[in-house]
Image (cartoon, rainbow, N blue to C red; front, side, top):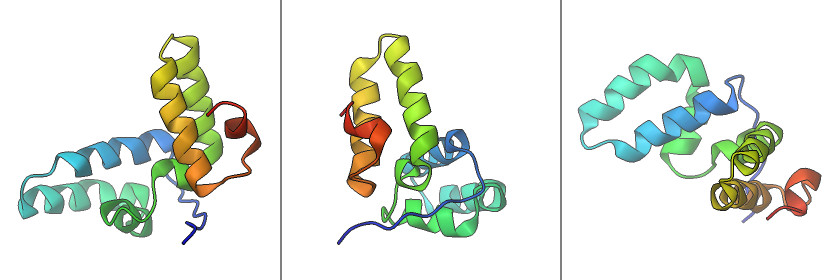
Length: 102
């Protein structure tokens, strides 16, 4: 099943930060703290998508993700950049910026 696009108001950087926090949780209390602090910032729908692994920040903000990937490339982090482009293409197979880079 293809993932559909969703565009939260939060920036790509905020979405990636919250995704990273979610990936590190150890307890329910950890989750509660993240929800309390960041839920309103990134939007509860985006939060739920990331928490359930139904959507990535790259799927929600593909253009911003590609800009960040380009910055990674410029700083010599080609593998990390390719990983971002691949995540964009998983949700947006025809994304012009990511298509030629992954």
